[in-house]
Structures are given as structure tokens and as C-alpha cells.
Length: 582
Image (cartoon, rainbow, N blue to C red; front, side):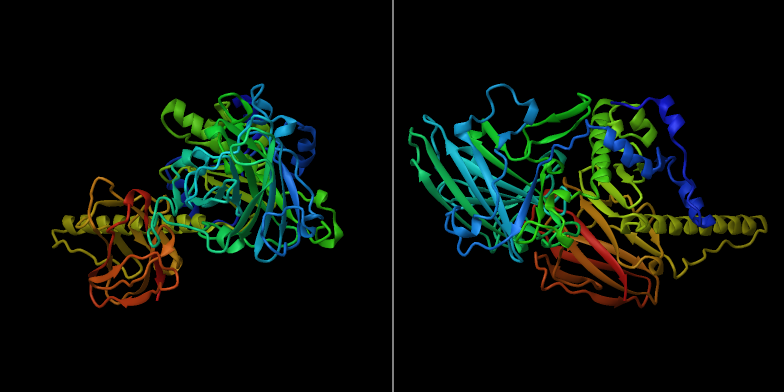
């Protein structure tokens, strides 16, 4: 349901944050108006009571309580003693849930169910897949990391431990224990790509594979490609080290009381059948409702696995049924803004300029955002959506990266953005003063001179000698920054895809006497090498061999870092450069 402009005007007020310096206020004022709009619609404490009245909110994501336990072996036996205390899940449903067309859901004789346990090293999964008379269990693929769902009867696991919708993991396996493991950089609809042993070789950026996973399958009745009623099961041990690899935001291994986002899927008949544990239901602005979709790559729709002790209790002896996601309200609201903005852009050919404009469009679920403070940051190329309550702030980017931090703890990117704008304003004032001095000199018929750039400013340029590139980060609106005000600054560049070269370079200009430390990233992975005058290093996906070297500028010099990009598909990569004081 949309929110009318008149209703918003009655409910909204602009909150002015105290304790902000004149300079910072000036920074915010000079942004492309309005770059950030805050919409405190209702006090957060009023929100909880209101939510209890809103029974239509999408509490459709299923939950499973995983008890702590360890199977002695992974052999495909899902009835051994170690599994007896773990309850079976609800039966799987058609992927669209209540929106499933008649006849697309499983019959009772085609049931699928799973159970889970965990310990310090693994998440364990057991599943049973039943087939009616006349159904066939298909298992054609025998080679590891083959696209199993294309032809085979397929059981799939999707895990997003950080709940961030990026770098989530997928496992597929068939009835003869052929597995395909892949990492999704982000959902396909947001420009994500598969990273796996199927598309890349070891050592390449496109490659990822598990290191400690164990799987097993067995038939409980029937046989492959038989026409009689049959049933097969699988037993999995998913290593936390694999699941937590390459995440863009923090996530930790399970502890009692914590949770991960997870979902399971059963695919049959070359993808014509999609039965899942938790239906893939998200806010769908085109229909003004929560709708089910045939798409497993909606991580924000996954269910929750809640980690409990051996007896199924949380800390303090609380029953697992008492668990609530404390971040749910802000996560859900940020997602509603994200989906609304996608449709808004599709209809109007541009992103919304303010929260008011997005809300007035009628594309946002008004119930999801009620009682929350909303922000729309439009300082960059694409908007970033924020929803905050008393305790949490959720931020969702236009490519669906979802991050949640405690309220009052500004995220690093917000601080860097503000500091960069402060630096830009300082430089603007510096340049204005220079113009005034030049005018004065001209009026007095004096020789015009150029004042050197002060030692607090550092100019960053991107070399175009080897490839064309440009800064696309919203945090980098000015080439001048103040080093002492923001150590650990990360700046992102994208190459120009139309220029095919095998070497690239980043050029840095700095005044004499400057000491700096540089680190190179490629798609968030450390790269082996160092930065110096003409320094050359080979790009490797090598976390352990990474090192950084301080560089002292003895004159106004240009420093280049160059590395080979041969055999790297730059259409799937980005370059990060990190600046820190030495």
C-alpha cells in the first residue's frame, strides 16, 4: 500500500542532529540537494504496538532450530542415533508459496524434509526426498561442479550467514553424490555472477570451491530411473570455514542464540519443479503486495536457522521459540525501499531523488517502514537506502548489499563520505582564496604567482596510459583528501571494459615529504606486491602473501602500481586501492 503525500506531511518532520559543527553542516548543505533526506515518521517505541496490529506483514520466512550435535560419520544414514534428537522440518512447498498455481505443489507421496545440527566446525544437514509411482530419480552428472539442476533430480542448499545478500553460497547434489559448489557475488538480477570450479581454474578470480565439505547419499527404496515409488536421502557437513569465506561484511561461526539465513530447494524435471523449505516471497511493488517468485536468488527471502544448545534451548534456558530477529524491522524496511526503487527506476528511467519522492510513488510498503527513520543517500551514482530504529541501522545498496550496524555507530563509509566532503570544502575555500589573491594581484598590476598545494592535501588521479578508468565510488567526489582525518581509506575504481589491455596502473600524486602506505585489492582480496616508483607486481588471489610497504615521497613525484591482468576477466573485477598513514 502506498503513502499519500498529505499523510506523509502530517507524519514526517525533519530531525536536526545536534552537536554538528558549522563546517559539517556546510558540507551537508552543499551536497546535490537533497543528497540525504531523513524521515522520522513515528517514534520507534510507538512502532512495536502498531506492528502487533499489522497481521499482514510478511512473517512468512520459516525458522528451524538446530540443536548442537555431531554425527560420528557422514555416510548418508539420516536415522542413526546422532540425528534422533533433531526434529524434521515442515514439508517443502512450491517455491511461490500461497501464489503457487494449482497442481504445482508436491503430493503427500512426493514429500521433502530436512533437519540440521551444528558444532564448532560444521553445519550438518540431513534430507529425505520421496518419489511417487511413475516419478523417476534422474542422476546423469558424475563430474564434480557440473550444473546438476539442468537435468538431474537435485537437492540444493543456499546459505547467507551474514544476511547481506552478497557472496552467499550454494550447494547442489544429485542422488549419486555428485556435487556442485558455487559462490554468488550477488543475486543475478543485481549483476551477480557465479564463482566456482565450473567457470574458473584454481588461482583465477572466477574460481572458488569448498575445502572441507563432506557429503553422502543413499537410496532408502527404489532405484535410479525406476518407475516404482522411491526415496533417497543425503547427509551433508558444511564447514564454517567454507561458508564464511569471502564475505563482504562481518559474520561469525554459530554460537547458541545466533542465526543464519538459509534455504533449501528440490529441483526436478529440468527445473520445471521447484519445491523449497521457505517460500521465496518478497515485496513486489508492481502488485502492491508480497508475492512468491520462482527465483532462489532472493537471499532476503531465505528462512532462519537458529542455533540452540544440545537440548534445544537458547542462553539462559530460554526456549528457541522465544527467539526473535532484533534487526528484522530495519532489514525488512530497507528491502522494501530497495524493491520500490528498482520499480521506480524502471518506470521513470532514473532513481528517486528523495525518500519523499519514493514514498509518494506508492511503491513502498507503508506498513514496513512505519515508525522507522528513513534515509536515502543519493551522493553516489546509485542511491543507498537506510532504515533505522532505536537500536539498529540497516543500509541496502542498489545492488542489494544489506548491512546492519548498531544505532549510533556510523558506518565507515558514512564517516569517510563526510570527511571527504569536509576536505573538498576546505579545498574549495582554499581555491576561492587563491582566486581572490589573484584578482588582488591583477588589480595591483603585480606578477601572478601560484601558491603550492598545502601538505594536508593529496591529489589522486587514475592513469590512462594502460587503460581508461574512472572513480565510481560515491565517497570520492573530490581528488583532494586529508590523510590524517581518514586513515584506512578505501577507494574503488572500475576499468573501462572497452579497452582490452594486459596491464593496468594507478597513478598517485603527492607533495614532497609525504609518507604513505598502500595496499592493493582485487575484488576485496589482497594482492601480492607493493607500491613504489615504477613498482611492478603480479596479481594473485593470495591472502597470505599480501604485504604493504610504506613509501616516502622525496619530491612531487608520480607513483605507479602496475600488475599483470592477463587471464583475468575485467568485466567481473574491480580494483581497490587503500591509503593509510605510514
